[in-house]
Image 1 (cartoon, one colour):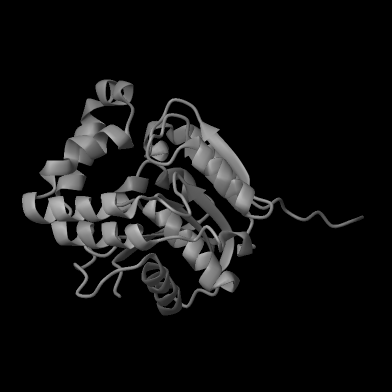
Image 2: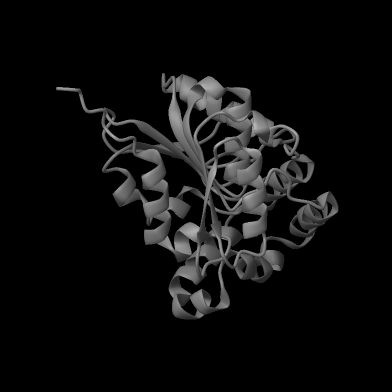
Length: 259
């Protein structure tokens, strides 16, 4: 699996990999990038059939996406990296931390779940976009991504994300829907050992704060931050609070030598 990627920041800095949601490209993280590159070498990638990554020729699973990230790290000769993923990207982060724990420095799971059912809903969404195109689901998806207040206040941003969503090839989107349909790591996430922060939106109806609390409770030592007044794309609606929470988790205090 070839994942198109982009690297920003000083290569001497620690590495942070950012994984986007279903239906978005690596531009999801544009608002965070200036603050992240102050501390990290940032790697962003597009899911199969999203953005610059080719439409997959074989079925996709969350585990195969994680294997694609491992292959990307190998190609870049990176032994370890911190990982932040939102929604589908968070699922990939969980799979990565389970399949290759030695590769994950710190983990941030945003607006995601170890299981996001029912499967029938994902198969139906895949069917709809294959038969009717991405515009058939755009309004419903935007309503989950953003609160109504944000869509009114930030109409230009909402329009940009609608354009991003409608620009995803239907087959790429459908393949990733089917990956989510069969994803179930509820019995496995307790094995994650990377220091983990879960970030959730207070008004997210797709992955609720209750989902976040369950995930944080299942992962040993995990912490949770619930951001007020935002939906599923919490990093877009609350960029400053999101960045503050993430950087607070990822920045490791310097060790002071005893005098």
